[in-house]
Each structure stands twice: as structure tokens, then as C-alpha cells.
Length: 260
Image (cartoon, rainbow, N blue to C red; front, side):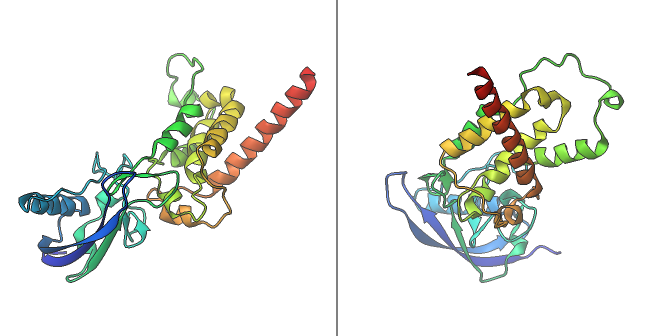
């Protein structure tokens, strides 16, 4: 598709800090190249605001390659925008038409308080990872890939789970503000592999416990999370985590009974 320029109207959420009330402000942009990315367009808007002696818009970004999960914006009511399997930084202005009005706002979820403009605090997701998203068992030197006791099918599923970038779109789009898709992906990517088996039960209990303590809601299988996930994480991982958690809970209960 050939490059062209379009004119757009932006309605952007502005909020000074977590304790201040926010509101939408409207900006007009002319001659925006359709080859520019959505974040580059925001960079240009900020340059325009600075030239007008106004505060630039705060928004999160880092890699701009779709792998860090920082570019978490709600665009026209959809986390990361309307394109499937795409992060905000991978969204280009060719996805919009000349004269479009684009509404940009931060994630609307209680566990993710707005800190400034389009930036939210996603520390609760870090808390979940710290609770068990790692392996502490010594596994020695790396084995030859063909010697690992794991099938390709299982390895592929673990890699599918590991594709989660922790952007939080699943939480933002869920009516219950549930983090089950994120948590299940992080639990499953380790629980399915030999290196993660020794801590499988403890991991499931700790990460689910951390998720609940952080204030995330329960999953009611609505499926909005899977639809909004830029990496296509499947709801199947939630079912897998629920099984792991149920087994671990029974083992923990039996262990407590046996120690009495």
C-alpha cells in the first residue's frame, strides 16, 4: 500500500496524577503519514504540544517491536486497537482513514491505577511473577535438545504460553478485571517443562494466591481476554492452571491432615 497523508482528530485522556481527576482533550493533526506507527504519531503530537508550550502526553513504550508489553493503550475502546494479534507499537496509521476520530485512553481496571495520562501502574502483575514465575532448582548444564525427556507437542505448548508479554490487555478487557489468562500462561510455561516440575504445586498455589491478593477478579469464561491478547494466548491455559491448582490444593490439605 502506497504512503499517503491523512488528517485525524484525537481524543486523548489527560490526567495529572493518580489523585487528580482526568478528562479527554481533543487535538487535531494534519498530514500524518500512513507509514508511521501509532506511537510515532503520538511522538509527533508531543512535538506539536511542546512547540505550543503545552505538556506532552505521557504513555508507556520500550522496545517498539511487540515483545515488551509496555505499549498498553486502549484505542477506540479496544486494547492495542482493532487489529488482531498486534500490539499498539505494531499498529500503523494506514489502519485509519482520513478524517477519523481516534479515542485513546489508559486501561480501565482497578488493579491498574492511572499514574499519569495514558500510563498505568501494572505492579500487581510483577507481584504475581515474583510469587513463583521462576525456577530455583539446580538443573546443571544444558542438555542436548534431543536428550530432553519432553515431546515436541508439549514443548510447543510451553512456548505458546511463554509468548505472553504481560501487557495486561486481558485484564483491561475483562468485565471482572481477571488476570487468569496472564497468570495461567506464566504458570503453564514452567509447569509443563521438566525443569519446572519440582515446584509445580507450590508455583500454582503461590501465583494464584498472589493474583487474588492483588485484587484481580475471578474468571467467568467470557473469553474477551483471548480475543484481545496480542499473542493469541488460549483459554486452554486457564483450564490447565485450574487443574494444577486443584491438585496442589488437595495435596496441601492432605499434607496438613497427615501432620496432625
